[in-house]
Length: 264
Image (cartoon, rainbow, N blue to C red; front, top):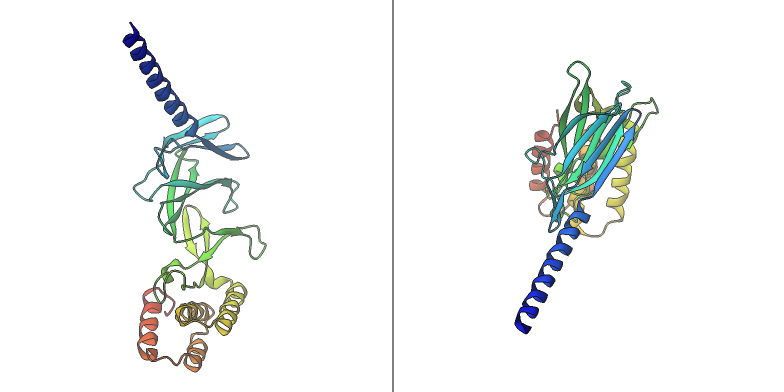
């Protein structure tokens, strides 16, 4: 009888432990939401496995009616956890888009955005994926105050290219969303690019480490090309960079700027 009591107590403790674990998992199944006008977005994060959330699900509601309810695809982007959820009109068509910002996990990489747009003809939502790359996320700004917003970030292709990640610097990159497409509009905002180039040059003047030197100069020259001042940028680089790898650095940099479209 005594052994049976001990056994029953052990079973009860096991059930209690399992129930506690189940409740903890349920408690982790959080939901994030955002809305604008008649559109509401909800993300059910699912359950957590280590650092990452599993089986996240998106529900979109218009005028109180659910028009989309599906798992967030992991094929186009790596999904570990949700960074942000917004509902806002990105292109002044009086129809709010849904922006999901997600992180794939890892030391730096990668952040991406899924942007959902409503098609009135089909009465369905379709999404595009935009990859931002390493590090922090973008900012949304109305740079010239015309009512249309821009995504302001950096060109992440410069990460690790001429320096370690810690020593990497980046040219300014500005994107605009319209009718389901993201377009690089950096060259339309010369004052913003000029301000960024000046900041990079000031950083170069004050830096004392060769680890950062090439990373700063590469980003600075890219900004100069965005301004249509590539030759002036090269002149300044030739004046200041005198290291033994000068010829190779300049050759590699020119080739990279051609590959990435700065030199047209």
